[in-house]
Image (cartoon, rainbow, N blue to C red; front, side, top):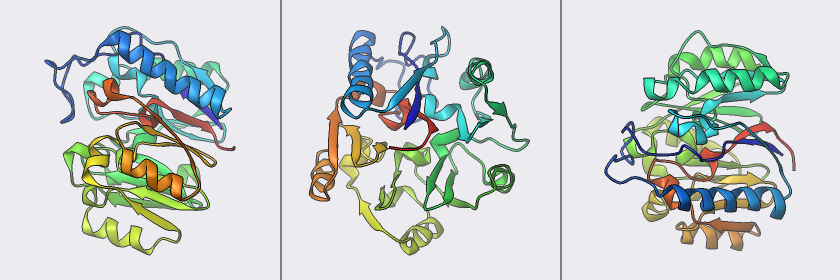
Length: 265
């Protein structure tokens, strides 16, 4: 697997655009760097995945959450159309990076659409969250661009504002999810899916347990999601729990810090 990450040199909570962010509870930048380094070490050295880095930029403190930069389909990059102005400023840097690395860009004309934060592949389909941040109006256009079925999933809890903070697909197995984050129609869709369905507790959801990086049989989760970790170990997965508490202060964790450039083991 090949992932894109951004070092947290300028990471901060300097505005509030989700319920986790409070400008009076700022992350410790040194501790955040240590936590990010530990995640990078797990992904590259322990698991053996490839990671490319984009250079961090001042005045865009959420750029560290690369999952929200867009969606990659083969050699095509579909940029995010952020809902909030605070994050729209990131996109010039991401577009430049993808252009300089040989990707073709295919822009959506509808939105907002917040990238892999609200778009995750499962069993040959793309599951797309909508509600707090992304709009369902873009899903038909997205389906045409990637030539795959897009399944819309409604999100109803502002704390779980992106799909990747309440749903994690595990190829050839099933998925992790937090049922309370989804509307009735979305739960009906999820319940009909094949594979195992690992519902997490509210405590593990609050520790961003579903915001997991899944690489084959290796799964990286925030160290606070203890019950989920035990369940995954019982299911035969190698679990890498690492403290990402500084990033939770901004509403993100392991998956938010990575964007998939290429799938594979």
